[in-house]
Length: 317
Image (cartoon, one colour):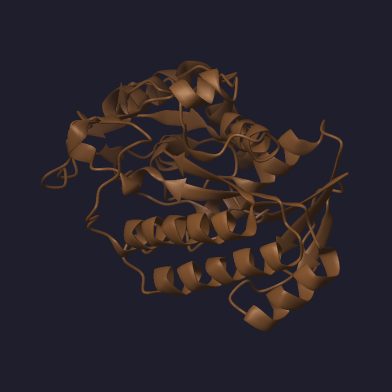
């Protein structure tokens, strides 16, 4: 029996991974730091601070999972790119892996990032990476991938590294691009955006969760891009949302200055995802955006107080 431990399980991506894992015959365990929060009954929940090495060691000694899906990391929008906590998470993740392997762990998949690539190349292939990434976030992820590869090689364990690109969908932080456009328009306000000429690879979070579930339960090793393999302009995404909500006239493309040096194209090569994992997304971009708009509309109607408390007024791209 596979005993799978998922970190970051109550987060935006993690909750969709748990849902995707339901059909599989696995003993599912999940880590959270939030005591008393309501969670899916599909997993056995454990309260643990991954930055507390003693707590992690104790939990892994007790659970002895065979598989690990490690998603947890600092992810606060606008902060995580350059936060000094990236080094802390790199160290904590290495300790988690060491405790996992010391207790007989056989297979781990860890969340990496498309920020490990040099975006000036346009198409991102797993055999490549930026040797000198500019952000502490990407630096910490790259260093961790090398450390874990060495640890797993010594222990005879199997490592998968999931380079995740842009994602969107239900439960995303409201300050992120897609929900911020939706929420601004739902409130009857202008959605302030950059010109949005840059093309990016977006994947619905339910498809991301399904791909990660398949990845961790496979024996595919090494780096795999988890993405759609297609690029759309950011402006076209905002325009689709405006059309869905019937208020394209309130989109303000170009109202926010576009960051200097913005790469015109970032898209994943997804041959490994398609050919080795046998995974293809269920949602097209249009269907995924429509689903996301509908979710935010229903959330607004069912939880108006929460909607107003967590909404934001700028749709920065």
